[in-house]
Amino acid sequence: MQPSFWSLRALSRRRHILTYWLVFFDGEEALEQWSQTDSLYGSRHLEEELATDGRLAEVRALILVDMVAGRQLHVLEESNSTPRLRDIVLKNARQLGYGSSFDGGQFPVEDDDLPFVEKGVAAVDIIDLAPFKTYHHMAQDTADKCSAQSLAIVGRVVLVTLEELDHQFGMEPIGMRQPQGTGGQR
Ligand SMILES: [Zn+2]
Image 1 (cartoon, rainbow, N blue to C red):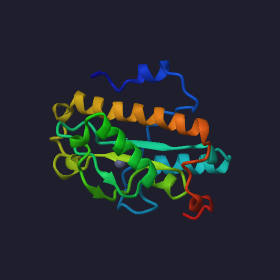
Image 2: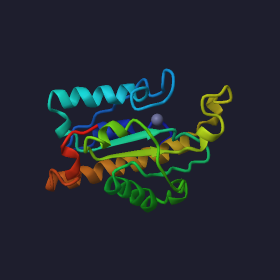
Image 3: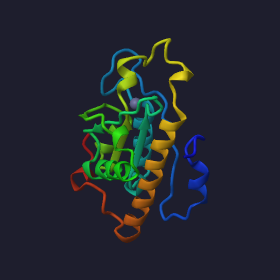
């Protein structure tokens, strides 16, 4: 298993049909109180920018990775995610032998994938809420809470999922998009 920061090198060497973007969203937290307009600043900004210049329709899938470094990894079946994409991630995790790390149960999270889900882009939130309940945003949230092995597990699941999406879209260019999402209500 590769403990380095995800197998980015593997990603860069691989042949692929899709273009991969690595996006680091800023401004997720609310400035005052979490609401639709006071949260997710970075992801809402990107979604709006892509929608404005017409590129949102080109986004085949968004894989959000959030709080996945915990030593005991319990990734959710996050219920705001696009079911078909979430199922692919779960299936891949189980096939790689990581089922016990993807056992967080079903739960909805308002997260940076939401602005995209609401516009009909297939998106999945790979998130472990355990840190949220314990040391999230606290002084105890120190580097020793992080596990290179957990990062590697999630990284491998993402790599295999990207490979699968590449394969799917190579033959079925619009297969993942949700028909109800093309309208544009927010
Ligand atoms: Zn988040």
